[in-house]
Image (cartoon, rainbow, N blue to C red; front, side, top):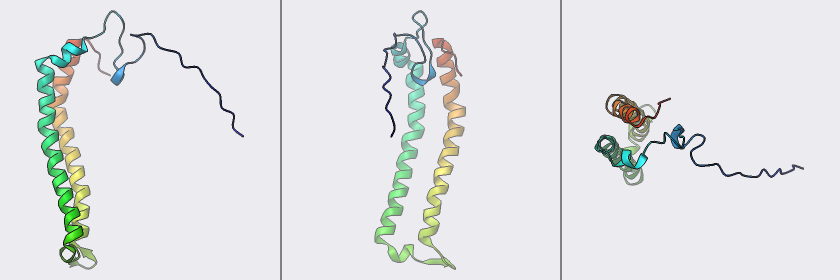
Length: 131
C-alpha cells in the first residue's frame, strides 16, 4: 500500500519568487502592472492581437461548422468519390488540419513581426527582463 505524506504549505511573502509568466519581482523594483495595463501602448498591443485573433478564429469556426453541417446534412456531396477511395468529405477533413497549420504559421509570423517588438519595448520600459 502507498503511504500519503502530508507536506505543510507555507505562505510565500509578497514580492518573492517567480511571479506570473516568469516575471520576477522584488519589493523595490516591482513594475506597476496597472499602469502598464492602462497605457496606450499596451492597449494598442491588445488591439493588434485582437485584429488578428478574432477574425481568424471566427473564420476558422465558420469553416469547421460548415464541414460539420455538410457531414451531417449533405451526405451525397461528402460521399462523392473524387478518385479511388478518396471522397470529398475526406479531402475537406484533411483540409481542416491544413488550415490549422496555416493559421499557426500565419500567427507566428504576425506575432514576430507586429506583436513581439511592441511587447519587448513594453518590457524594457517597465524594467522587466525578458528571458
